[in-house]
Length: 437
Image (tube, rainbow, N blue to C red; front, side, top):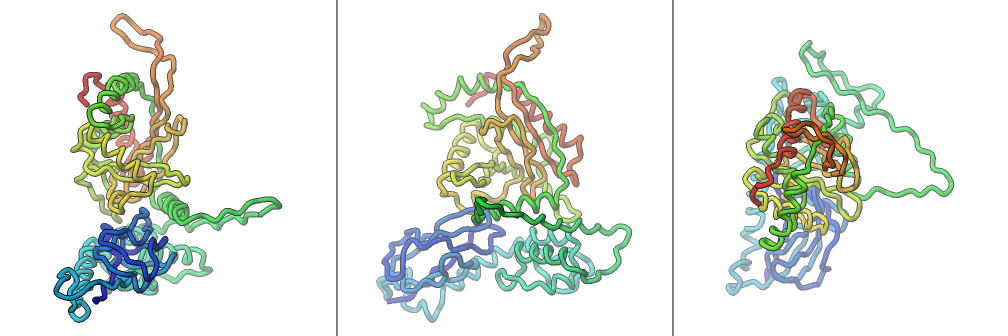
């Protein structure tokens, strides 16, 4: 018999740890190769971890609600060893091949980490891009960083560590002195306001936020702290879009077995507008603008438990309308059934939120960091409207829809944000009824 350590696998760029939600087997149970043995949760998505070997679970090392680091052992399995099992040799304990593989995975994960780009920082302070952006935004000094005890892999400072430090610093009676800023220094952000005490009355119900709701709440507050939001609105005549969809939805379902919603059309219009205005497809890193090569569209999706998740359509500019329909249907189904993989929610460069699916006319969406813009699509409503014809203006019944475009005023001015929205509007309003599916 041989001992096999089940490690928490790599889950994509920037994901360094996960919380154990529940074990699907208990100690003493026998599992087969590729069986899902444990449910985990990251700050992006819930997923299962399969076992790469068959064997018996002899020890569970991480219990429910405990946090494990990538590459850390979460369980020990007893497997059939010896020459008959080349995948898990008897020498596993002495040669320790699994930790070596884990170390390589950890090195790959560490590649995105960057040394803080501040000239007067002398120590080896390595931070993830997200933490680095918070450090720059909050004007945190090297001396202050060295006082933070990191809870991440190899004591690295995580997002939770830096946000906790910022919260404590803003509420402290006297902050540690920092060097006097030069006239060009970035001013410190406004301290977080003190929460107003809430009175609980007789008969009031107290509901504890679940883990996902707390993550969403932190992300929304963090986005408002980082990005000065501006929102532009436009009303679009999507009569041609509605006609085209009605004409093609049965064709696509019979041909490919896919339902045709409006979302592939919206994504196509957004992608074309991004190609017209690539400076919408950027992120901000301190005083640098990172212009993204790929166009990856996030799709805000409500889950049955009332929470929100944003799966990502990768390289949306390379997909046909039928390809977009297939990708969107697959991501929406897996989002609602908790079958998304961590990589399915990473890498978005622009996001669309369809508030019209709830009957809303418009909204003012909050930008998902580190993106710089998000589009909200309102409900399509029949209204009387002026129709321009060669014979003159007429009043007709048209399919109208509002769109709301929120953007980060640090890097997207009103002209860019407004022109981008107008181009999305033009692509939808002038939709060609002969467009191929």
